[in-house]
Every structure is written in C-alpha cells, then in structure tokens.
Length: 274
Ligand code: ATP
Ligand code: MG
Image 1: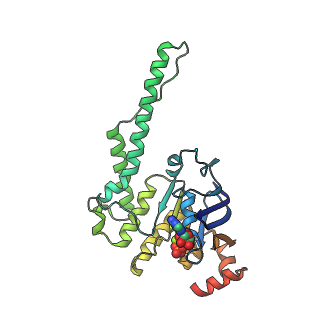
Image 2: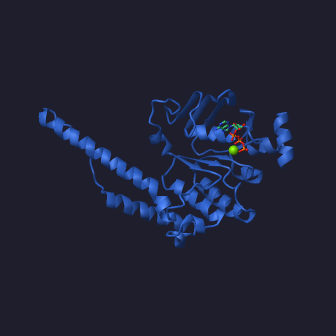
C-alpha cells in the first residue's frame, strides 16, 4: 500500500531522516518506537506530505506522492492523521469539526463536475461524437445531510452523541482525542497515522483512547503509530520499527523486538522504557 524508498529529510544542514526504506502492506499495524529526536514525527509528517522530503520516494497506491507534481490533496484525503495535541478547531462545535472536511470535499467535487459538464456541453455543440456528461446525483444539501448522519453515527459509536453541539474546550483530553480519531475516520481513510496519540493525556484517559485505536485496528485499518506505549505496541502492532538518528535500525514482530532485540541501541532503548 505504501512503499517508502530511501527517504531523506533535512532542515538546512541538519539531516533528520537518513534514508528510510520500508514497505507497509494493507492491514498492517506498524508501531514506530525510538528515542526523542530520532525523527519519528518527521517520518510520519513526510508520509502524508505535511513535510516535503528532501529526496526519496513515497509510493502510495502506485503514485509517488513525494513527487511535487502530484496533487497531494487527493492522496492526503486517504490518510487520516491524529496528532498528540488533538488539533480540533476550537471555534467549531464537535459536529462541525467532524463534518468539515467531508462536506468541503463533497461540495468541491460536485463543483468540479458541474464545471466539467459545462465545458463538455459546449464542446458537444460543435462535435459529431458527443461526450457523455458526468452523472450528478447529489446536491450540497444532500452532501451536508449525509456528512451529518455519518458524524452522528461515529459520535454514537464512542458514546459522545450528546456532545455534538458543544465546543471542544468543554471536553476532557480523552474525549477530544477520541473525537479527533473519529474525525479522521469520517474521511474513510485507507490508512491512519498516529503520532503519540496518548502522550498529552492524563493517565486515566489513556485507556479509552487506546481502546478506540485498538477497535479501529481490529476492523482491519492499516495503521502507523508512533508511540511510547510499549504494552500497546506489543499487543496491537503486527510489526515494530525501531528508529534512531534518522534511520530504522531494527524491525521485526513485537515478539522479536521486545523479547529478543538484536541491535545494541534497541536493547539500550528498551532497557530504559520497559
Ligand atoms: P519525539 O519522541 O521527541 O517526538 P521524534 O522522534 O518525533 O522525537 P522529530 O520531531 O521527528 O523527532 O525530530 C527529529 C529532529 O529533527 C530533531 O532533532 C528536531 O529538532 C529536528 N526538527 C524537527 N522538525 C524541525 C523543523 N521544522 N526545523 C528544524 N528542525 C526540526
Ligand atoms: Mg515526535
């Protein structure tokens, strides 16, 4: 699903990613562990092109999304991202937060089709072989209603339907993060990227967030999770990558990495965090 080939990223003279090559298959749950500053967040941000790689390729479903010429917005839609700091819009209600992107994309696609149809119609006036028009079977109102239904269904799923019309500032950290997760799910992503989704939470809220991520994993979602929750990585991940100084030093099943790490740096790291 995603093939990362010799990915490099520098900020000025500082090389943060020094050649990452990894292949992520559909349905895999990849946990990325490693010391602070090793480049884990930078790697995730490159994966969905929040950062432009300095060199290398990221082939997502056959398209090199590191190539400047591709329309990254189309691909980014298929990647849900959840950050440490929730990143909800505080001036919008919970429901608006979840509906925003699906409505925006639905309506902009509808507009594009209308514009294309306009030009096809003009072309058809002069052409012998008339081109077919794009079928349009929706309206902005329909798009909004569907996004609302979907958002409410997702809110019910996490037991927060009564919070639909409140603002994020009134919610606990755990509630905010679960809403950030379903907001990403509302886009029907093909892969979910999590960057330390529980690091900013009070301990008593970590469990509810991990539980939701675990459920999403069980439903078959492809996932990449940067985490310091070693117990969780061990339970949920199908593969663990250990990153240090901009490289993947070791990878393997959770069993291999946690019980029999080969690289001395992995051993040293695990001895500190386990
Ligand atoms: P942590 O576990 O603390 O989150 P990390 O593994 O996620 O660490 P990154 O955030 O990817 O590490 O950072 C890797 C290195 O890149 C760090 O040395 C950091 O200072 C540097 N870095 C990250 N973003 C930038 C930036 N925008 N400009 C310059 N340097 C940056
Ligand atoms: Mg980080």
